[in-house]
Length: 384
Ligand SMILES: Cc1cc2nc3c(=O)[nH]c(=O)nc-3n(C[C@H](O)[C@H](O)[C@H](O)COP(=O)(O)OP(=O)(O)OC[C@H]3O[C@@H](n4cnc5c(N)ncnc54)[C@H](O)[C@@H]3O)c2cc1C
Image 1 (cartoon, rainbow, N blue to C red):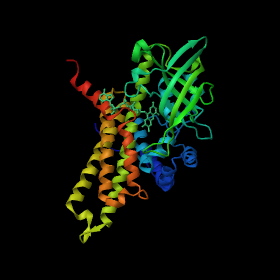
Image 2: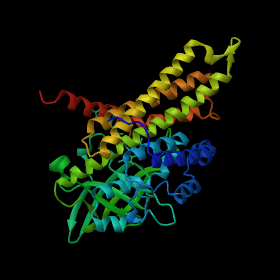
Image 3: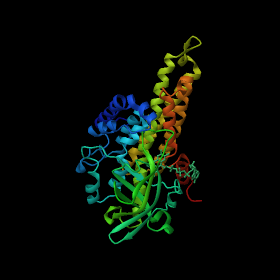
Image 4: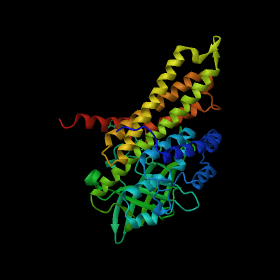
């Protein structure tokens, strides 16, 4: 059975997220992009209506919506509003998703409730290091057991909400010679001595989100703050948690592409050249047709990956296909939208150049487009 109809709950969440994006995010998007600041009042408003905690189980004070497909639907709308603000306000999920996937009941009780109180809190997921980006197995941050504590040392970079997150889930190695299998995940609470913020990045896009280095210098955390236990299977759990976020990230790219497409379509109907709206020129009309087709195809791929995860099916390759395609078309569609708007699109008081800058990050984070191709081609080619 194939069913493309959203449930009533999904439609309601889509509508809520869209209205929030339109009324709250869009009006301040350009201002906060220019200022390169998080609009905290918008993050708090989103929290007040439960947008950031909808995907935390009810048992820990969240909305209890445990569907990846629904997350995809919501993420498209929020990124349609502003990818930078969306990155900030769903930032709690960077920390709480690994905790949901890998945490014990006691860890969930202890940590998830930190996000479901009256005040909006952000989360961070710290994987990337100066010498370990795509090559996650090269992570050099160490975790050494000392009595009933773990001691972390190392440098993380390009961390969303780095230094300002209520909770940071950081990956470190317990034994570098084990590569991938030496990696473990740890929860570090804000204010823990030994964890400090390093360089704050000045970014090309998603500028209303915060990205910085996170430095660990003899940072001591309770042994209970390790996620997934000490066995090698903890690494597998961590990878599953990351796999689960790929369709959701892909949906963000669809949202940015759709924002640019709709704007360019509207402009092409109004803008006249050679005595007629430019939309009447076949060169523009065909471009719009291609943009629309790419967006619809990307959305279907993200929904498929999200749906497969919700069914408990293996979806590593499908998640990569969705992320690769959605990120690449977001870059193409935003570039074409700017082209349709000519010089007007190039100017900073119009949103299309921002959407083009925002789109680029989707080809880089959560696995670059090359890494997604690696995952897909390895699976297709198999053992030789
Ligand atoms: C705005 C922003 C926010 C981010 N937020 C976070 C965060 O919250 N947490 C976090 O941990 N990280 C975060 N990142 C980091 C991001 O995940 C990494 O930048 C990404 O994984 C790529 O790593 P790298 O930058 O070190 O590039 P590298 O891995 O050095 O790659 C450089 C180039 O080489 C290519 N390449 C690498 N290996 C291969 C290969 N085997 N085959 C073909 N090509 C290859 C890459 O595709 C890329 O084009 C963020 C990045 C940005 C830009």
